[in-house]
Length: 304
View (cartoon, rainbow, N blue to C red):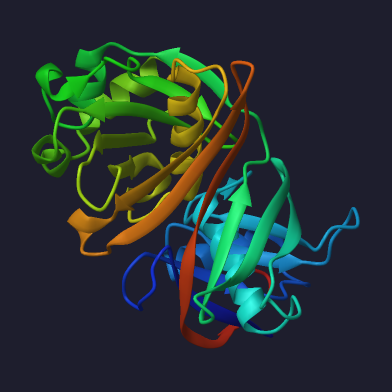
């Protein structure tokens, strides 16, 4: 049997940049094992499978990396909303509309509209409140990304796990040169695992150009040596930085570059709302472009 798919580049306004995503807009009839096999075949950071809703929302969405299913992720939600909107399945988007996706992490609201009358812009709100987890020693973090302790900045926070639906280990670096030198160091990654710390590492630096932040994300144990654009991580980063801001109330927004070092430049806009010292909302958005469409043949059963 065959299933339609779209290939979209997410967090970019031009093809062959951003983060590639495969979207199956009607995945009815596929088993979880078949979905995993399809995700391995595309071998993108993630592939999404769209299903009818179970609890009255717009769609149910399942997200797979080449190795496992995820409860939530950023660029798959943005790209899936874009793909459905571009195909006309969400109705007119000349004015902002909100769709809701049912996922393992919860309900993900996404605002969809046209920006500058042409590009389709999608922005999601995180399905879970900010949760902060373990901190790790600077030396441990540095070893996991082939840097030295002097490359890591701790003025705002120590290397720390945080999540708004999917956890990452966050660390600030001192400059862009350090960010460019970063590489997964597998002995250091294994040391994080031994400590029970998530080895999906999101690094960032403050930037004084057209971007507020520049970032890279490594998840080698998930089959993603480096990710060109990580919406869920940058969404959590916005929440984490807002939490550490001295003001008890505020609206925050960051323009973030990612994927530059991979030759897949991406632009993400992340934001957060803070009230009475508590981060009450985290968001991330961007534009996407359609690259290709086709069908994939799936024989049953699929070997695991």
